[in-house]
Image (cartoon, rainbow, N blue to C red; front, side, top):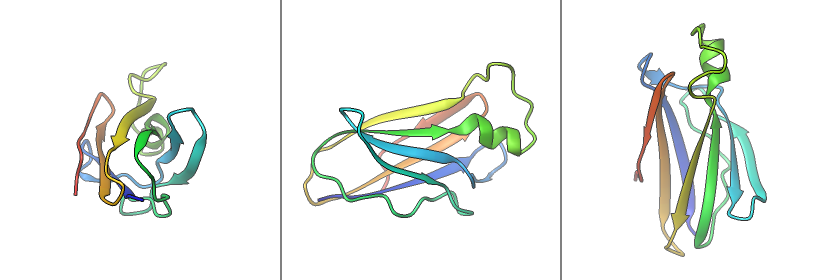
Length: 110
């Protein structure tokens, strides 16, 4: 099984994004985990995963509203979905999210 971690960084404010709800699902839609990022923008408790396709969903619009950012209705980015695959049966996969109200990026981190 491979370990999984994530880290959400608010690039608009230059800080970790605390309080972002996220879910992890299998390719068939089965929810495997639900949590919220901590003060460092990380979420503990993500399960170990075997090879396969997965999805992490981040609810970012609510986070920015709590920060006092005025968003249009509907917001440009409400929920960000990252579909990713795990090929190794014994590796580490890090899925960071760098986010602002009107853009985001991700990559396989270490």
